[in-house]
Image 1: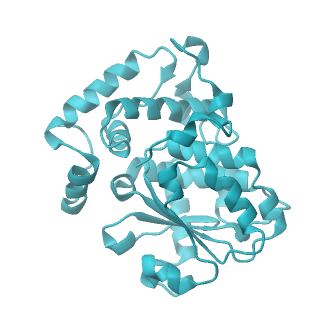
Image 2: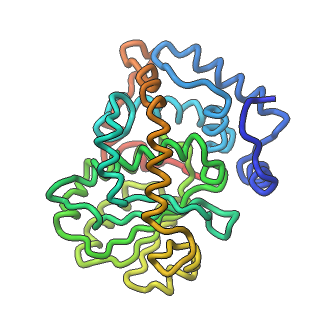
Length: 310
């Protein structure tokens, strides 16, 4: 038997029905992936059972898609450490930004057996002091724990709620095409998470310009999972009932200050992870075959526009 966390009966049922998981075949699937990793001279990746099964689940047990996603996960973290957490992570510095509460994961999933919910509040940080790129990297401290430990997110996916109240021009100016592409590509080709929707609420003037820039960068399937509610909270509640929002939003899904304190303790307990992560990554000089075409990957006409993300 593989050394992984047992899923709840509800999650196991979803893993079988939605992700094509065959519990009796897990050992063979994990072994095949581990063998492939060892055969890649350019790739140093984690190979523990839980890490590998999380990527398999995130790719609906397609071995080839899983290989590609693990490769891209380490390739992009190695190539662009300023965008994606990987090496030389300064936990204390990033915690200063994390405490602002721009990004927080909520404890109860949608409908209690659905996707994990993430709340993103851009206006909680001062754009004269920080960039959204720094905020996003700081959020990676929490995201990595989710990737490792959150079976709900891995099996059922993730829904993001972007509250844009009080966002200023200074915030919007930080959403450059380069940064938007870096975020979109990493989400679609490198993370073992299946985005199930992004909801925009309290959208201000100027939002459409940013939205129309980012939307074409996403796969067609993900474009169909974008929901712009303006200031119509009732429209949001139709898809995400109010009770699943934090108490600060009139819901019952945790208090943001309390959640941030809990997450900070979990992040501090992960310090050793980032020390260990220095041992992992890619060396493009050792890659066999065709080199990665980073320009194409991040170009507006790059292959990421044809991605099929489930």
